[in-house]
Amino acid sequence: MGEQSAPARKPLKKLGIIGGVGPAATARLFTRIVELTDAAVDQDHIDITIFNRPQIPDRTAYILGESDQSYIPAVRNAALELEQLGCDVICMPCVTGHYRSDETFGALTRARAVHMPIETAKFLVEMGKRTVGVMATDGTGHAGVLQSALESQGLRAVLPEPEFQAKVMSIIYDNVKAGRPADMQAFYDVCAHLRSRGCDSVILGCTELSVISAPAVAHGMLVVDAMEVLAMRVVEECGARVKESARVLG
Image (tube, rainbow, N blue to C red; front, top):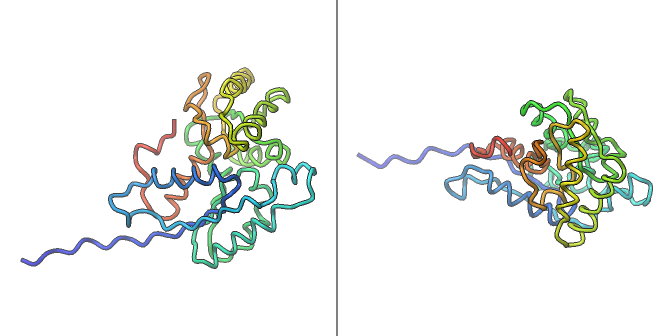
């Protein structure tokens, strides 16, 4: 009897990542995509093209009017370049950068952009959460990026009071972006504050917070990393399998 050939694998969609916003978060996203993919051989993994473009103007500074350098053209051009290179699915590990996403991703004609804030909100609904604390940049809060996504799914968003929002910004800019260890006491202080305001969960709504090794639960609240959700969703969107153990985050 002749040897039976292995069943043909279903072609996977190609993923494009608009990275460098920031670089550590981009590296983290790539690592998590690989780790979350249920793969027996190399060929079970996704074909990924990464643009690491740290020269994309600061999103928060532009949104807050502190800079007249818009990030939108650079992100839009990167998305179009990735599409031209054959990417079917496109994502960006920057929550703030999803502000005015209709302008950045609306020019795509074939590829699909995965909207990290909306996917994170959908995940929280799946987890049965209702009142969500938001840890993100001033720009994200000012633009209402996460608030809009959460409210579109019937969830209530709670932002930290100014004293605690300053702690979040310090972790992002003074610690992670500066290459320094995160102030985890400040992180727990913010979590306690959000818990006191009735939150049953917290979003790590800035990808710089994805690299600080935050716990899955803090002060009795589920801590959901938006980039972890993004990694899981793009694996699914590209047609690969997500490891069963990774389907419930935290």
